[in-house]
Amino acid sequence: MNLPLFKKNKGKNINLLPEETAGSVTFKRDIIFALLTPVATLVLLGLIFATLTILEQKEKFTARNIQKKIEEQTTLWQQFAASAKTASNVKDAISTHQQSTQQNDQAVGSITSIQSVVPNGVVITKLDIDKEGKTSVDGSASDPRTIFQFVETLNSKSETFSDLKLENIGFSSQQAGGSGTQYNFSFSLVVKTE
Amino acid sequence: MKKSIANLLKNTQLLTVLSIIISIFLLILLGPSLLFPKFSAWRDKTAKNDQEGSRLTAITENVTLLQQIDTQNLQLYSDLVRKLLPAQADELRVVALIDELVKRSGVSLESVKVISKTASSTTAATTAQVAPTAGSPEAAPKTTSGTTAAPTQAATASAFNVSVTFKGTFAESLQLIDLLSSTKRTMSIEKISFTREQNSNDLGVNVEFSLPLGKEAAVSPETKVEFSAADTQALKELLAKLTIDVSPTALPTGRSNPFN
Image 1 (cartoon, rainbow over the protein chains, first blue to last red):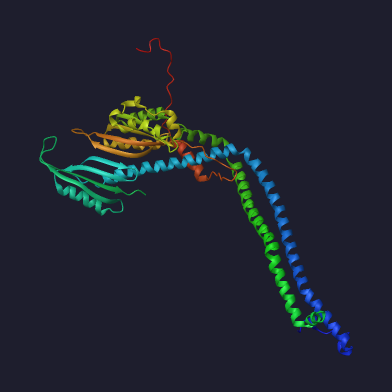
Image 2: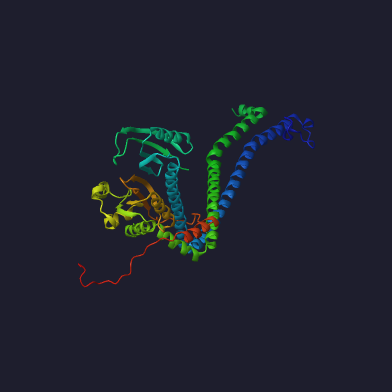
């Protein structure tokens, strides 16, 4: 009880007062203290409430200001709405066109990649490529070692070709043209696209 | 009774404890019911204002960016885009363009088939009607007269496909593909198939093209539309590069005997 509230009044030393009067002063002081704490709590709550109300009102004012500015800017934007739409369409279209050009370049890239690894003596009879790079190759050769070389070359270039799968290899004693023998093959692979 | 209460009130420690208990009770009672809703409302408003502030910034920036767009050039780019990606299926123009590419590359055209590609919004009945034509190669009409797509169906789709079959050498075939990069119509190769012709150096080539259609972009004041230097450069390059286009003929009309 060393709080200032409990300090005895220097001007009125209760020890010098009669016992009844001194008791009454102490009692009043304790009652005031007992009442003061809840009152102070209420005042504090009131202050916080008032502060929050002021802050809320301030935000309401800010919101009105922002809304007003948004309306002004939206009205201004309406003047450029047609340009915005056209520009957006142009940008989307350019993006689509660039993707398409890239897709076509990849198709050509896939064809030339395979073209560059076909050994002499191997004749491609059918080549199918789709946009994902899935490829099927049919061909023929008189010497099976050239087909072996073809497949080995494709396998060695794993950065360009993957999932090589020999579908079929066969031997026919006579070509359609009637000259000699040949081995027919077909395999599938994926040409990696960037 | 009065005396006992007076005695209780004389107990300083009890009074202190009581006052603290009442204070805590007030805090518990009024804090959540009075202050918390006020605090929440203030926080909500602050958050909303932050959001709206960002929106305002975005709109202001967009207005500034739009003010900087060169509308004269924009019209030029828009015209180009309408040719690259028309809003509606342009089968006849595409067939005429393919005819032009075929002539320029030196290959000989075997067949052209326009395949409707139905969008998800199109009904199943429509798909069923189109499927037999699209699915049977035998039914494929030869040459440019084979346009089979119904314009109303294609108009709802985001793209349509064209299958082109031609004969030519490997170099000629590659040249035709190369010419696509100069064509004023976006055409993507979906699938390409080379078949060696018997007793000939020529190849039978079948290419399936996808022809995307333009979409109307939905823009709002918050949508950022910016034309960067790279965009402008890309458009300028395209304007210079895309030179192959076709227009309808302007022949005199009205023949005395259209059957001869």
